[in-house]
Length: 165
Image 1: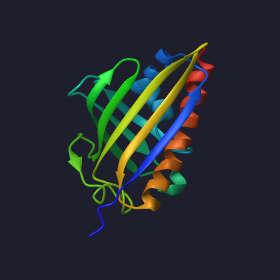
Image 2: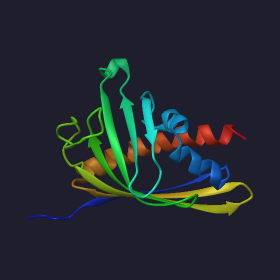
Image 3: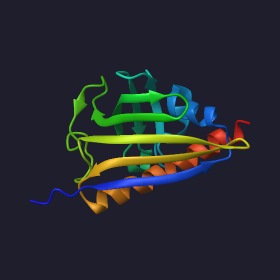
Image 4: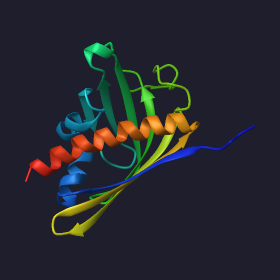
């Protein structure tokens, strides 16, 4: 049996202070502005940012893709503002109850539970380095699909935090 998994690893510099990038990850209004790839919206974001708390987000597909909603719950295992956020990503129902990736209609290869880490580093001069790792994809295809979606999310985040100054 093949137990190999694949990780998404990204590094992105933002022309924004570390506190502003942290805010984008941890406040509902900001999460609604950037969560989801291009064309998708985030009609719901709840954030209880503390160890033992959770962030719950809803990603809504555009009408031409059927308009379906996918709910995710990020159970926080470590939170050190404004530098570190670790959480376990799970798909959930509208009430926040955990469901499997298959029950959520997610393609094969995406784990039911993914351990994610966001590390922010103050680069000085109002710039921030974001390094993110998503662990545990079961196939290269699932990893690459997730990486592409994450890249689009971070493009939206950059537009949000960089124009806010």
